[in-house]
Image (cartoon, rainbow, N blue to C red; front, side, top):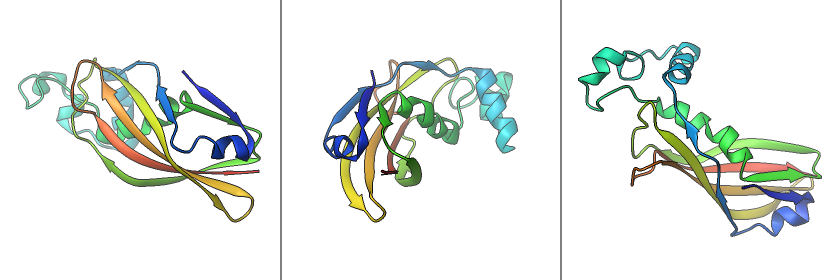
Length: 152
């Protein structure tokens, strides 16, 4: 599942690489409720299982930002970087949530390295196109372009 690179030269060689897929991860109501508590976002479509049965999605769904935050563990399954002194998550160039993630669904991430450029301070900036897929659903749950920096 994971590609391992050691040092900046090996990171540079990943420009344009398809990193493949992470493992499938089930989205549970407990995870959604915990995220709701952490963010104070208790909208009924996420946490009220009874009311959500009659709602637009036929049950509770994960928060979009929960799906986005799960890119952290899923991304770590796609690329492991060793031989650097520091890694920094710079953020996202863009993000969209084309399809809701129903509780009980399984998601996984697909990644591809869009670009690798050198930056000041003996580092590289890596732009990664990430897609969160839902098992059995044609449209993705999340499409994001993440930006990371790695320093030697």
